[in-house]
Length: 113
Length: 110
Image (tube, rainbow over all chains, first blue to last red; front, top):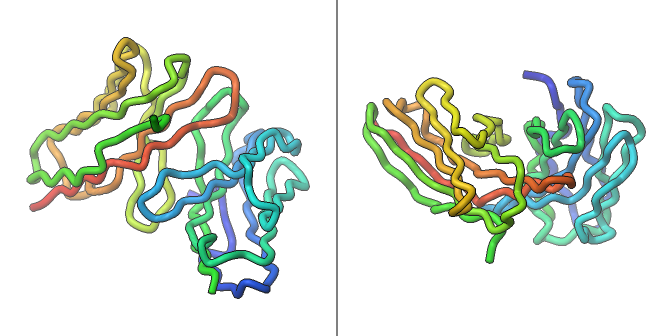
């Protein structure tokens, strides 16, 4: 299924680097999300966009900066990350705002060295 | 108290067996409930939504108990391919926030 695609699949970056994660959805959904998944922990919601407007910012450090230029694309800009930010970053989309099911991309496995 | 709690398992079962596990949630106003499946190092995928009256999809049956605030998943006639982590997901009534459990690991052995 290519409904939600994320790039890159893997990323290794130093603490002083700047990188961006990209997500694209082809499902015609109105909401897009960034989640963080660390080992043995539940998925943590980071950001939500609905119709390109940010509607949720879940106390995420400013070293993570989201961007949603249109309803099909979502970016997560990364700078001066810490080793504890190493995790699987998952993009998702949903049809609308009323807790409709999420469709996830295949994730970016990030390692911060 | 965590918003969504699951027994991490692992549940180790032989092929053909039935396995069932629950998930409890803390917010009594929760309105939407889902089970997702996540394979090792892959993204979560929707297995099924959970409806108030309970629902079945092939070998999978989901139940909702609002009074006791839990949902359950039962897998009949387990297949090797059912080995995965099953995530319980609960949503409120008017926001975007879906709360995820940490998952229950099921391993089906030949």
